[in-house]
Length: 216
Image (cartoon, rainbow, N blue to C red; front, side, top):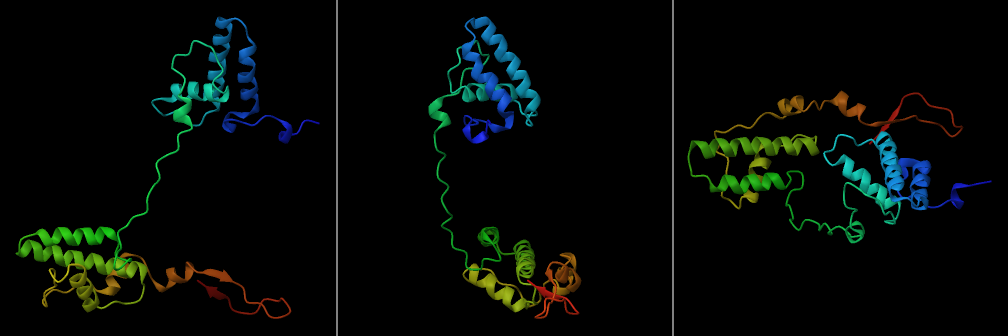
């Protein structure tokens, strides 16, 4: 019996075993014209099996895959040059972790960047409105990650700390109420309970007790 474990490795599995078998038979066709004609036939089959047909370089990708599956052994008249083996096996550049350390993670780096931009504004009504809007956004971000209530004094202290004392909220300014922010975010007690996982309570005998138990 023929098992998959005894068969040759699938180079690009999305096209299936039959397409790979047809490509492996191409080098056995001695006539170059007939070999190229067979390659075009296989390309049409691959196009029907492919799920990415809306890209501008769709045809070129099919021919690239044809050469890759054949292990770059095909001698045909291809409309596109075969891909480079070195480029195919080249490892991508390593993505380094961010070295920015945020004092308060629930605000995020973008809040810190906005604070730095707000510092550059000249004193006046425009800057005061910007600082007030920034403080309201900080309060919204705080309540997104910490659903408990937060005082305006805490937001003002965090803003002053992150701006190194260069941005302050005036005593006349009032931030958006916590209840209003929670209502906008659709964070209510009912929605909070729905987000928890239901776990049935069971006694020592394995029978379910009355009343559900919720866990985070």
